Image (tube, rainbow, N blue to C red):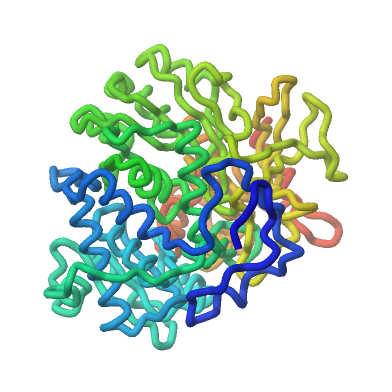
Length: 550
């Protein structure tokens, strides 16, 4: 079933998945967003394996000795080495560990070549990659395993402690890493295996990955992305806006577990035959030095990092970049101008979402309007709608809506009707569209806190705080912050007899860091006698938000 331009596929191609969990859990077709394939580049065949297309095909075109992955301390993996290692991992998954096409495989670790090789191995084996943040704690990993019905995980050997505490029956964890001391890790399993592997002939619309997104309810939501989706984000935003060259060297700070990081650190560089400098930990000032040291030409990070480089006197280190990309939160015009004045670089701002997989609105070069997020990326349609679903008037705030070759498909259709309405993907952002079609951010319309590029659900921080014996009630919202855009702020009602103090603030912050991923902790804690509530007892979050604006 070949797709014609602008077609909305009527039926899915036959799946290669033996484990049909993902096909069974796709939302009902009438709840899908409208899909658009109006570029020649988006006319993909019915059957493709993204692992092969992004790696093997590139090695054939550019040569297997070409650098693909660069380590912070000088190590280089070539396209051939990455291809061969991923082939061996795929063979070990299927022949040694019994993974069958359609099984979900959890991946855990920081950005490094082994994580990338495992990701490709999972795709080539026809399994479904579920890449997770290395900072996640056992309770968070347990929720992911339960929702996605995961029974097998590949983890960096330095990050085994939390995942080995996950109370999921039958969960098998296998380690990986350059210096993995385990005799039972994936490195031992692939030793001596042949480098050739016939990748599973997956359908273009077989699910390749599940990406979890923060939500305003207690249940984590998984977005479902096809093999063709991975190519589509490279053939739209990357090819049309970023426009990488084969000689480019990429770097990015977002973890590969974030779809922003997956695009910038894996999909985009490899689709172009370029290479990427993979950094496990990269504070902004260190990142600036590494960009200059390694001759990086394309950088993808959050506005917070650019602000920190400016404040730390390191922004000049970026002068050698050809492209600088900002996403994850709004890029202020003042930050854009500061980078431009110091380096001559016009930062490319963009907005994407986990549900859409990557950036769908942006602008580059002379098309940039500082302070604006840009316009629809070629291949997408972006608009601003009013509460009735009609097009909002120019200059009037409304709901950001998008259609394109990718779109929201929540696992099991959970809350699908909230994100997808009348064929549009509604991102939860409030925007203004000007007369030229440029988009100007006005903030979020839900309870997600976007802080330094991280999406944080306030309810999750509240749950962590409530497990501390001193806390009676709490409410977590976002508060404006010059450096991070927004910070997690908690209003806390203490139990009777507990005395508020600076020491207690630090104790509560440390407690949250132990309970959930540390980046989610409340950077501001205020002790209050009571929380603002309605007559029915519902907390009035807007009043707390408003108090931070006064």
